[in-house]
Image (cartoon, rainbow, N blue to C red; front, side, top):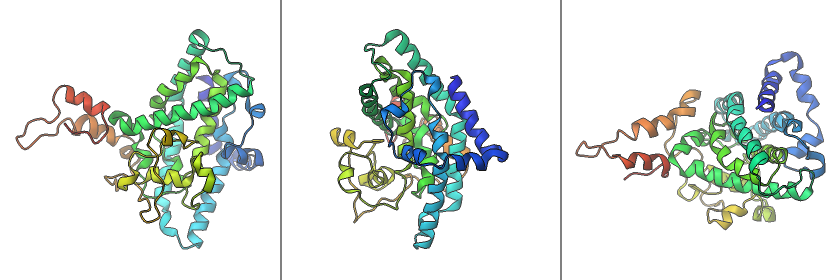
Length: 334
């Protein structure tokens, strides 16, 4: 928990301490951090023995995120695609990202505490932290766990209430990647800790960072199809489908780094040129209110939906149906 709190404090200090902000950002604009943005990292340069030695990679690449967002804005503006970017929408996304960082240590600290306990007391396989094979195993298994967790936050009504804000933007650009929920990590941690039976904690946390960082690069409309790369890797094209509200886009392409899980479990859908994704939620938000975007889906599920009545003015959700509303897909009706 201490490392997560320190990382969050570092992030906020970097933002709000104006005497060092410019220096810190410029200092981090190097090729190493640019590589890290695309998960181009080797085992030898990233493996560490303890969880306290894991850097805050989010903070290290944040300067490049600012560069990406700024250049994308300029490219869209001067290429005649200003309709793909709205300043008020991007500010909302960036504020959501900052807010999520303030609370992220809570959900992630729970996961790390549970993870370390399981590793120390219940691990099944004692994989060494300094083995490249352990690093590679975690690369794939972390992404598979992300696939399962990401699918859960879409297909379980209660969990969707934590995640819906990420899909609330009707634009698709790099700033959209920062539109994160404040309590979503508590949900994903359920799947994170499953790795603790055979993956050392620092190796898990390293890949948790890089898996998340890579997904920032997917949130753009500047790139089309990526050719053979898209056969295995998640690409902006694949992720655009995930953010679409077209019928063919719903509940598709859950992968983080790899798209192979979607192809294996039949949740993959390719982007269609004749039916490009239309972004946002099926029920449009029409607001930039941060608290509303963060929490109103939970309110709708736990209060509004449970009070729904039929034409006879009788409750639709009775008894066990209330539980089904929580654990069934968000659109579930008896």
